[in-house]
Amino acid sequence: MAAVVLALSAHPDDIEFLMAGTLALLARSGCTVHYLTLANGSCGSTSLDAAAIAAVREAECRNAAKHLSAILHPALTNDLEIFYEPSLLRRVAAVFRSIAPDILLLHSPQDYMEDHMNACRLGVAAAFTRCMPNFITEPAVAPVQNPVCVYHAQPHGNRDQLNQQVQPDFLIAIDSVMECKSAMLAEHVSQQAWLDQSQALSAPVEIMRRFGEELAKPVAGCRWAEGWRRHNPLGFCAADANPLRALLADYYFAL
Ligand SMILES: [Zn+2]
Image 1 (cartoon, rainbow, N blue to C red):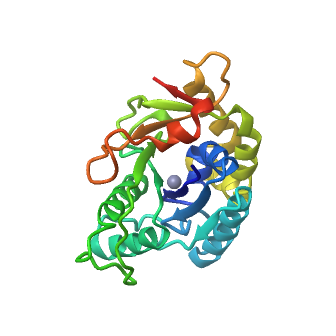
Image 2 (cartoon, protein in one colour):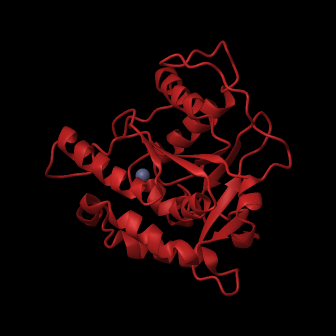
């Protein structure tokens, strides 16, 4: 079974940090991958203005998506302007319906950053309204009927906004695609300097590898993993649907 997958994140580089290993395995298994980062990265610089850095970050996002031949959808708003509100929800829902994915990959509902949590809620709601003719999207897109299985990635650093450890339901072992994931994250050249200045985070690729190593500990012989939790299937898909397990059986480890 090849599936259509939508990875929906808040910012350029979130997908590479949190989801790209799983996406690379899905792409290799024949799935079609779509990318949507809700915000354009407009606050990710201390030297370029918002429009200039947004253009740089779109180019970086495009370069990262190319590694998976992923289809990139344009950002819908500015950094720090991802709110759970009707007009943005209508726009997210329009993109969702135009793709009609079988699998939706989202941020953790709990995370250190408000944009991440709001992007998660918008993704969940956009999927939930997919078959409702009376929820009018912007632009108007006809409802779709197919089930969608929703998964949540780990929060950044595997910790929530209260700095508590978040335990995934299952792991995907990503050793075989770690070089691809690292190369994808390294495409976000502008962020190496920015993270160093703004959050004292240097070497994003090293940080990402460390988080992946932390997750992989329960699996013997696995060095790096990505963690996932499945959203409650009610309103989305069959109770026992778990396409990540079906598609990535060789890499899937329930915890
Ligand atoms: Zn982010």
